[in-house]
Length: 191
Image (tube, rainbow, N blue to C red; front, side, top):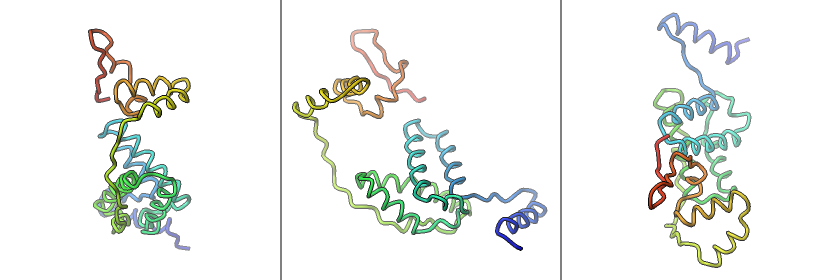
């Protein structure tokens, strides 16, 4: 019985005899994990973690389909992921970033000849409105500081006094903080 696995094995053997190297087959999961590992080497730690989280969410949406050959990835999978993100309550701008992340990984697979077409390229971007971020008013700050407990109180106070984002605060390392001198400093270092 000729199964897909045995066909790949025989084709790979013929290719290896003719060319001298093996054909690399990838499942959707193995490709995205490889892509994430390689991006982690080239990007800042925060960006790499965001990519990793997006890939994990996408693989969760795919379920067992993640173990299929990457050629089986379809527009239906892309749309299912977008629907999942919309239902999760994320902002459209964030959803567009998550979709662009997966699309970037699949674009590389397309350029590498592993898949003929990127199914994410058929998705339209979700409409985004210009977000106008305003500082918290006194009442909101009082509520935040009243509800914050343990480490979150420290994170909230640090954010209040520095204007830093929570993601930056939670990834700070002691070597980035300079308390000597007249003015304490926080330095952003490439890790």
